[in-house]
Image: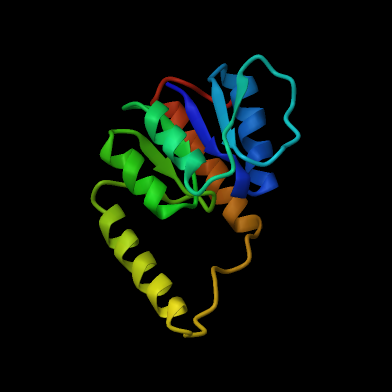
Length: 152
């Protein structure tokens, strides 16, 4: 099992939770990005720097993710693609995208995108907060425990 991070838009607090988790449980973390990031020098963490084009990081994650891998992303279309390949996708707010829920989430996302494109002022997601960080850490811990790992 590997953990892939859609790193460009991942909140710093979530990156830090992941850095600590992979150091404790000896699980590889692959950070895929097209912006320069500060990354701790740890044997469990590798990086893939992709070209800056549209969906380059997403395409690389989809290419590499396999059943049983965990993908951390807030990108619903990316989550749809990896879930359809048998990987597990976890939102930085601590919500899993599942085969049962991803199509509804994608439809809502597409509707909201269409409304914004037509000029509707519908706002964005709520501010990322401490409860989101806690929810993510809890769900990550459960996932790692279920797969024979523990956060120590």
